[in-house]
Length: 408
Image 1 (cartoon, rainbow, N blue to C red):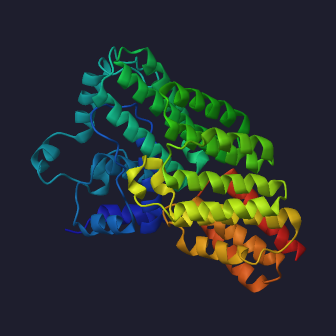
Image 2 (image 1 turned 120 degrees about the vertical axis):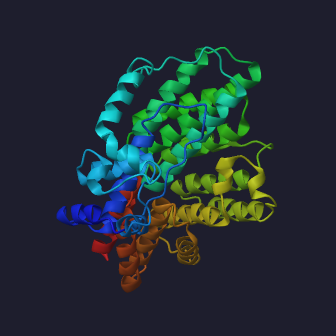
Image 3 (image 1 turned 180 degrees about the vertical axis):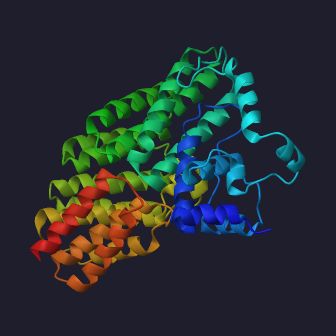
């Protein structure tokens, strides 16, 4: 049976199915990441798109998941799912006899004395290995949210979770569990530091990166230390501090790292050296990055964060080093445009920020080289991609692109 209530409510509010889907998806993300850590089930964000709205309106689905129901009610401005024609087929009789609002009141009353207020959850008395599974999944989910939505959309969630995770250090646990907890603290501080940097809060990000580095050293986790140090180095490169960036890249290096991470370190070193205009050393590091990565045999064999170090990612980092070199010296780089084109074409569509950054840099170089028609095409694409991401770093790249467009 067609859900005319839902369709009519949507149309009264002058929203398309796509607009409803986008608002519902963002609401789901906001609500799910306000939850405290759970040691029961890993966080899974429900996917919701225009097709899902259509299925609800034609009646193929009458009772979506709780997060979707609550988000739909919020977006469409109703108090109860029944107001937009949603109902559970299995419990329709109960639905008809007892109002949802009454049941919700009873449930809220029964839970009020059991659940502490958000932000004031005490740490568990004892932490076990099973508890770390949910915590580690939470960190992975926050990292994925940062890649999808940008630092400004992720930062407050990451800071809140980091505060709770630091409180768990007071819990009793075995030494091996404490090491895993410190690694989780390091990885979460990395997400928070990177999100803070991406949101333009450099002062805070430096504190967070240092906190993470201390935790990684305490757990003796060279992988986490490498990830933190290279992300910290990228921030210093953005702020034109080549010496500090090189020291951080060296801090992250270790013979125990997988080849993908070693290739990334070489690419980050190339970016730092580009700030000093050392063309020969930049090209050696770029070549080293490609050579090391070509010997990768099992990308999924390393820690999860290295899974994102694809060939396209290494090429993108190398392209940025050549880009910084070209911008700094004013000399054209024959392979730069091809490198950026390849990175733009092969960029993961789920990582909108990376794709937008690469596209903006490609447009900037094309403007420098006088290829205005192609540059305009990529500039427009970068602007469209930027509309889905909140990132100060991306804003800076777009401003640099626009400056070149005016100059040329």
